[in-house]
Length: 212
Image 1: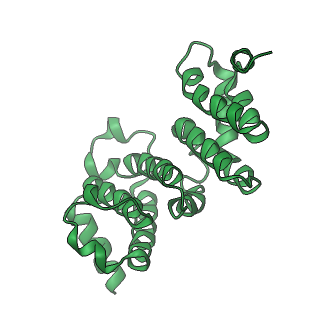
Image 2: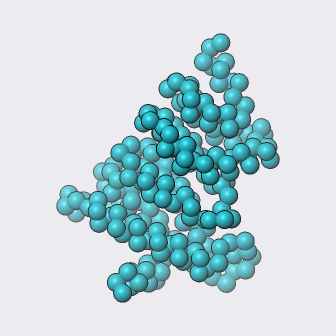
Image 3: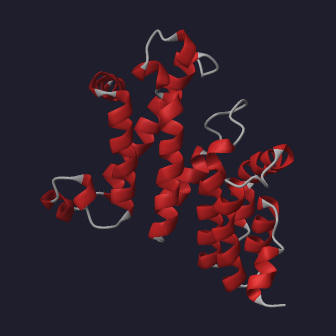
């Protein structure tokens, strides 16, 4: 059986992750690339969506078992593809500690996947800020008090991380996009998205809370 024939036998996203976690480097890469193809294909049915929720919920535990950096990269990038489908009902921010860990990884691909996942959370968390009083859009969303609490925690963490990662050489860069690839840039990318979605008033309010 050739490698191409082997990938054809991977029919579900769950099988992709089993391959990523156990196969050799080449097959792991092929399985990681197949995740998005399966997600947006007609093959992805109701049962697989439950598998996806389970995969995301278990991601931190599975990630901790991975030794090879290339396998960590395949795993995290694949999780980032399906991340938006995870179950948010119980604890909307329960994956944040893991995502913050990834945000400080030495591998830029892993950091960028973490940036995408955190920014994916910021959107729903700021709906009440961007669409105040719109009952139709706010239906099913977190209560504003709960969302604000999560956003404030994120704000405090990012501030602390940016302080810890800052270096004098970053002074010469005016825009986040122009910063050299680094953990600092990754944290700034998340912070920029937060400023954009929250708006100046909310960011100022969070800053005052920190100062008190």
